[in-house]
Length: 129
Image (cartoon, rainbow, N blue to C red; front, side, top):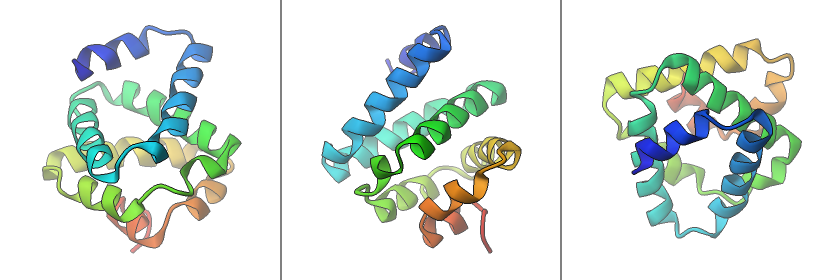
């Protein structure tokens, strides 16, 4: 089901993609952290099988939306989300990290985004040693 939702997402217009991501960011803090971790893990597993270009599109829009509204991620449990990410298989983690790095390093304001990510998460994403 999630795979079909992601495929549907990539067929949307840029404005609709932004709206979907904005709504997801707004809803995430209200979801029970345990349920959110399960959802995020499934989402990451499915997304890791998509084309790198599609992952980069998704990450770019997420980053743009977060930078436009930094408070949208302030109440998230980054510890739980980081543990969820590190529980993925090595290849899945690599794919996600590679795509995220591509997007981040192409952004002129990447330092703003990095300031919003706790150190533990930055280390898990290989953004910090």
